Image (tube, rainbow over all chains, first blue to last red; front, top):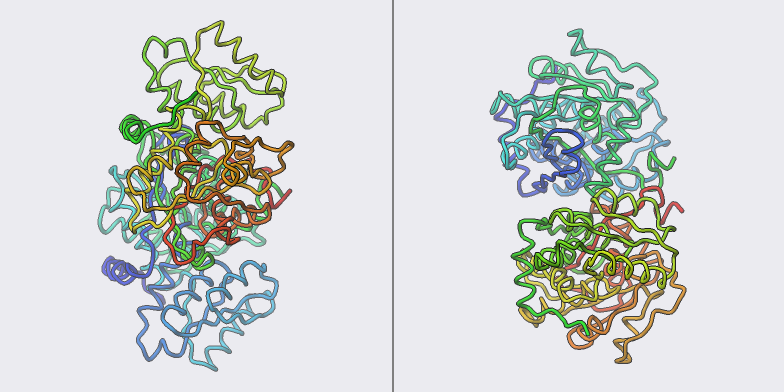
Length: 319
Length: 319
């Protein structure tokens, strides 16, 4: 079984990533603070290289491979931000990245992977076909699988985001909130926060329409996602792994949900008041705050904005 | 005739504005640098209070009014970013702002002015009706007219933006480029740059479809805008004043134009690569660089992104 990252893994990741990735800024908006009744410090991973925090985990995993393994290349079967991040990380290390994608994947996602030099391998749009294609590549090339979240190195890389948020916040934080999909960012964030500043609450947020994490946290048992998943927050439809679920169960303070309407409203609020572009998944923690899913009132809260890769031709409010 | 701001006016404005407005960040994008073949440092006035640089001029004008004048309130007949900026500046000084707007003005613009506490006075959508309405308010209340650009105090406030850009740029600038509409930002920028670092080129950019500044710079005589003006850059349709034109003629290095297609493409490039929301008017200087309207190749260029107030329901590429 995959083991969870330690705080030492996260410190190592931070040093490793420093020269490759952006130390993203923290922005705030007095209008949004006033609507939320809380002081919100937004950590802007939408400005991260490749447009999302996924660059942290992918770079950390690729950069920590021993040379003999690295030279055989890397492979993954995610079609989202992790795929683009892995392609760029491999390119910067000068090795091959094989990205298995369903042939039905949206053209902009394929274009992003191709632009970063990834080799796209198309397959049928089923999990079985994706695993088979990835397995065939591994057998043929010896490439190392870098999963999107169920990996100690990947989760350690994601943890570097909360380390920067805690170090750079100009006011003491009462809480940190981030979205939870597969749970890589959440696991890294939990270890980073609870091993250094355990008094800071960590609140995970997910769409009510994809609430496997909340159900799992409540029942104490890893839950499958109930399919089909219908949420605008398409980055958060994955179920968790045993590793990420275990970290969440052990360290998270609360797991909350947000409705679809609140997610779209929060996304639009960030766009119109902060003048920055964020993905629907990003807006879930703010949506949960605005819906009162946990008591943020009067608190100073670090909110991780996870990414900004949206299809500008298809915005939720113009569909 | 209105007199031009001096560098001393701009220094005073900087000190006056410090505690009221944001020192906006400078962002860059290696992808856009690589497309442009230049190093571009973007000064993000879309993050300024009220969503545009206009807050600088409006706050400077309102804060510099003697108490006896200020208490009678202020008035303007702009319907765009200046109106919202003036409403907020007046609110912070605790005085009334009367904003004359045509009854045909878009609802979001009216809502922004109202949200900042401005008193909207509706009139027919003609210049004559706007002037008559403003004149009636001045006669009745004694309110002081704060014009959108033809004002020494307003232009001095706008000049504070270039001062910050020069001070905060981490690399020596070869040039600064900004859009030109009425010319308040350009006049302030020119005085700020040429009185402190005359070796930095200042390049004004405007839509080819609203090229009064370029025609005036070429012929040496103030030109009217040719009506009707059909450009997506709706913040740049105004003709210049004698004051702003005089400063441009005396100090600008070049006045260049960009096509409508290039403006939309540049706007979309900023949105998709930098993950920030900018108005079409903002994109004009980048569009001019990408079209090769002046020789930016290999240079380090400060680009003023003027504002981020767009109607998210009506994007140029989804119309």
